[in-house]
Image (cartoon, rainbow, N blue to C red):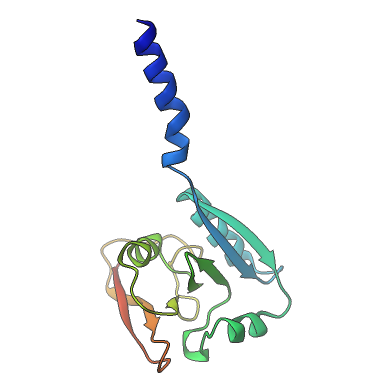
Length: 148
């Protein structure tokens, strides 16, 4: 019985290590409410978010090579990639799993009903929320398609 209890205790102590949250640094305007909602969304989905308020988001986007056509209200760094805007967790997980060669992914603008921008609705139309930017050309193309 002692060995069984010791094994259960060991598993209980090791379980949090196996489920360690993925670190995220998210730069946002201190006055943006939808950015706060996106931070909550990431935390709810198991990410450890360090939200950094900035009054110069344009500088951050330039430093991270986010083109105007891909820009949104906040910029996050996850696993060495740039995540721009209200990108769904499914797309982030795909990026982290597949590890493609790219700068990052983006949900340009502020798409209605994307994470942090209202309730995501199923059954609607397909919308291309996430794009990838090639380091060589800054051209973008579809990375992940969301049906809502």
